[in-house]
Image (cartoon, rainbow, N blue to C red; front, side, top):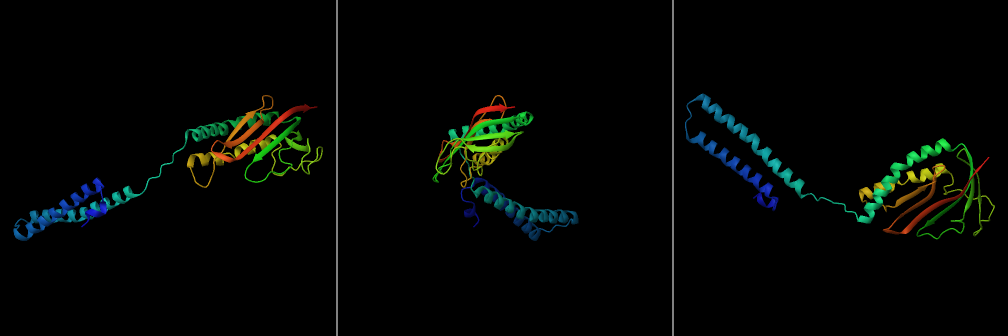
Length: 238
């Protein structure tokens, strides 16, 4: 019996009833041909054609019933997002949409010599480096890094000594590059994948040179990650 395979799917049962009626109609036609002498050759041809069509329709309808039932039985996953994460997602999308215009503005103004102080912090599960978070005095010419020295002492890092630049963002172009990396976080917000933790990049731009002067990357629902960068004491040199 075929009924159990469709469970409680009403559309499957309805189509199955249609199949059953078609099969009964074919059986009646077979009995008609066997018991009644059909003298007219055209009438016999018509009945034979109807039987052929029925033989084609029955398997097609049965296949449709099975396909619909199988499709309906597949689980449908719905990704839900909290209001806080939804707000972060929308804020990040706006940040990513806006930063290219600021980058273009900085590119038009970068043919200057600037000095400024950068302080970059990262908080997570790993123990922080004693040098991490120290202010670094930076000098850029035409957007390129020319000098980076520690502005304070911490651990083995001494004020006035050349700064370790690996893993740090010190020039405006590197600031914009850090913003661009946030696209992966936006995809994480949108997809709801279990293997990624989304975080929202928040950016404040300087009014004069249009590059970021404050950046924060975190999420209200991720307790073990926080990253920030701040640029202060910007000066233009002759």
